Length: 447
Picture (tube, rainbow, N blue to C red):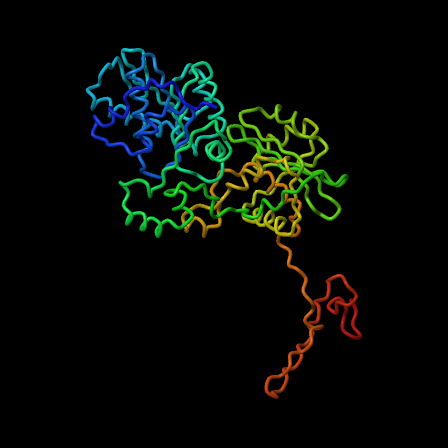
């Protein structure tokens, strides 16, 4: 596949040098190669935003009617990139300026540069985009990425995704790992950036820890440290689940946050087999009810009393889940450790995705609190509501131990006298019992 745009390119390298910025070799490639689909996997402070911003400004100035769209994880973040472009434009004498505000720059040749927030509902109106820039792409939600790609369908415009890695998740990681020849890839670790001193990197490595340093400065997609369920992947098994058993499920209510439900079968050995999942945002409860099986005993979000009652009115069997966080996490972890939880492969993709993301905070104080970061946990919350109810009689039960009276006496040390055996404790009589002497009068007496 030809991943390059036509050879006629604006003089972006000359423009960068005119501003007193000498481009690195990889920046020259970004400015001149014309990759139609480009992934920039760069360390912090590599200069990725600067070079992409200059590319967008050069195209807007030298190609009439160019539409440049800047998107990031938040409006503040995309505005930062936009401000860099405005700053470079002002240093060039604000040439060809028609009008400018906090979020849009328009030129007299019909070109414009617009920065947008990371909201799917506010970006769908744009079309015929010449250059689409997704900054901090590893933090942009997948649904937003899917919403903006069709903007390039008619224009066959350029798409550049630039980011520092953020774990093995999301479209940026997937495109870098599995995107094939559709994408050109440029990796810029800190060791290739002459502006970052080796002494600074050594200090950062000591201060941040190895895995975080590799991700921030070595362009490595690291598995997250501090996962709440680090061994959850061991639960995935090939299907099918055994027939029969008790049908159970858990629900976490949400609207902007996803509504999440997982369900399955509790077999005769007490093993929970998960065989289904429903995971959707911005839909009413009536929509979700159409996608849930009715032959299931549901354990639902304790905070959703109204939603539980609505489901009961729709002939669902619903009980209140248990919202105790730490005991619930312990109950799920116990099933994982005991091989008593199995997820049929392909049935619960969002549950497995969350299990690879749900973690304790990076700060040591946050980890000592044993309270995970409150995100990436909707399907996991549904599972926690379910398991904490299924196993509620086990969660605080002490395991039986052999009676002390049946254990052999410990041998005496160095010929010393053995300690006398402990006296048996007489059980306290029940009140309504013929053996309770307090119910009987003294000899010769009467009631």
